[in-house]
Length: 528
Image (spheres, rainbow, N blue to C red):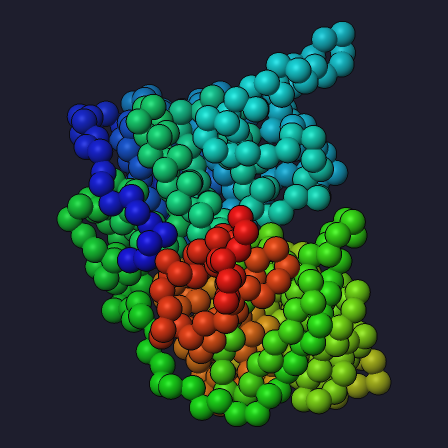
């Protein structure tokens, strides 16, 4: 287990076994073509952290959406404090003091942070919203729990990690006693994950009860008291964390032994395939540069990882490389061809594939079918179109192949609307599309974000296979375990600059952490 998860000591939960704050009994929920929850029972003790574990599409988020009133169950019952209740919508859930932090945020981007937090529970005077008391409470909560945000900032202008904090503050603002966290660490930095783990422990000390959906076994081992495992919509069982380990949990989750450590041969590094020289990219507001005169190479047959705390220019660097943002200066070359000013399609045709950081904003057209999303980068090719007319049969056949090859689970197969799929299966679809293009350079940003251990194992093997076939891989990851396991070289970014280059076999996560935090720069101590 890495240094990121330091919270091994658990307080004893001194509650009677029958003291359940929430009981979900024999819950069944069906959607077209799929039974998302099949006779599932889950019981949450008062004052415990209860993990909910399962593969992508196992029904975890659906079960929690039933508890929060977003879905109505087709069968079963819910009890709160021993009494049967009906939760018709999230307002009912809030009245029962149940709050939820969603995997895909429920924020209004054009509203301020403060207005998002108080949305639906605003104080008014004379028909106008009064914000002074709300602002004071938000600031107090931010300070108490280490969730510092700018209440006046627009949600559209803040990072994904900051948006996560806003979602948590929304829940705290409503004084909820049952807290549902749906993949809460998927968008957080390692330091923020540490902080959230401690925040959850503090919630438990205050008597709050937490339902914690995650794919990360080390997080479960660090903070959970018990864990309920779902597999393909069915409840497999509930175990005490003190009586189990990561290997047993992963086997319960996927039904087989999972290789938790990446097995790879030494890299056979070839010629330089990709070069970035003196590259500068402006920040989102264009008032300062987010990437400052960065230079590096990636060779055939190697995985180079950009590591760093979120907000230090990694996102803008990738935007500049892939064409999502116009570079201010410098050059980008792929196989000797200057693609600095090329369009996104031209870069794609030149052999660049991109697994984006935000799968909803840049990875998928959510209201398109799965099959349409799988050919977004290739629909104009003769294989899929003739004189501008899409060959639907060819697209369907291709989609069915990728769905099988990459185990993309969807209720209606190729015609499933992307929006209705689980986050992990959406991610699998993007990776399938980008890897199957057989690129010269694969730029993968957080490729395993939101994936279960079985899917992570598979994606890691695909990335290693790309490397071993002579492809170049540029990996951007906030997961230091992933960085250390996959990389052949590590470049650390801090405040828009490359501050160190490392061989993962000759460094430690502690050393990387110092460079990521700006405490060191290669060759000299930073004046911080």
